[in-house]
Length: 179
Image (cartoon, rainbow, N blue to C red; front, side, top):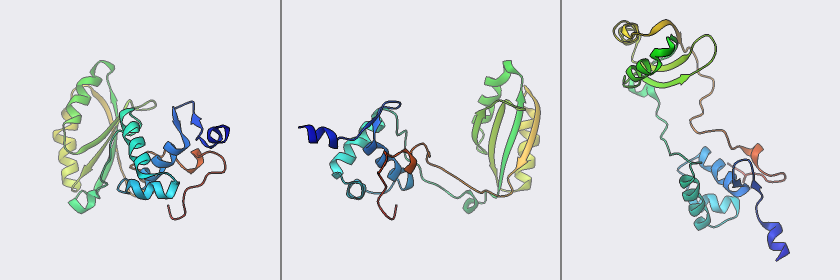
């Protein structure tokens, strides 16, 4: 019985998941299409264990969904832009409600610093960006100042969360080769 307890994975008290959960999340983060059987084989547990843990992680909100990464350039969206916006404090909800329904807007964040809202958008070209600025962004009441940052080069894109990585594994644990 004592040997059995020693073999149990350690729980991470700060988040309520153990090392097996972290290893499963690491594998799913790298390839969400990987089968439970393959993940189980690579981390040394059964596919049933992987499946039940994934369901529990979903139920508990650690996994919030699975996404497909799509290249916007394949759809003609060649211009990626970040807008820094200064919005009147009493108008934040109105402005964000107007922006979030626009198809060009992909992300919005309330931030600290020189701007209080950062917005990301994708555009099919200079003309679509110009039209968006003139007919949409500049017409929204409550935006006091705007700065447009056209993204010239992307150095890193992480669609899945890097919250769990090899560094989060218990000491002495490593992911299977080839992952």
